[in-house]
Length: 111
Image (cartoon, rainbow, N blue to C red; front, side, top):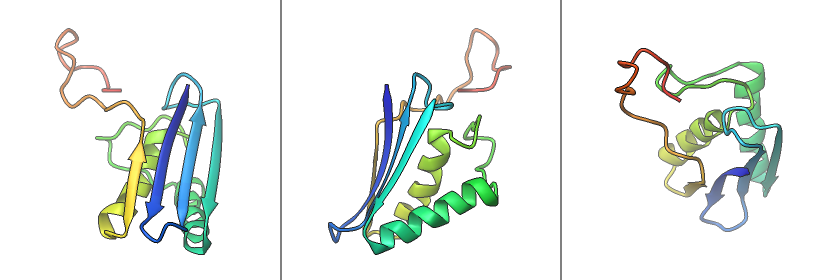
C-alpha cells in the first residue's frame, strides 16, 4: 500500500510529496520524500528538521509511533496549509478514530 501526503502551492510550481510504502501508515517500511520548486525544497528541509532533529511531535491526541509515521508528516504539512491559504494539502491516510473503542472501555490507545 502507498500512503501519500501532498502539499501543493497555488502557483503550480512548489510542491512537497511524502510517500510511505507498507501496510501501516504509522510505520511504513520505506519513505520517499520529494519536493519541487525553491519554496517546496525549503519547506521540506524545515519539516525534516522539525521531525528528525528537533523531534517536534504533536500532542498525544495524534498517535505517532515512529519518526517515519505518515501522520507526523501530515501534521507538519497541514500546519503550513492552515497558516497560509496559498497551500493545499491532500492525503489518502485513513481517518484516526475520534471515539474510544467501546469494547475495551476506552483503555487502549486510539490508532
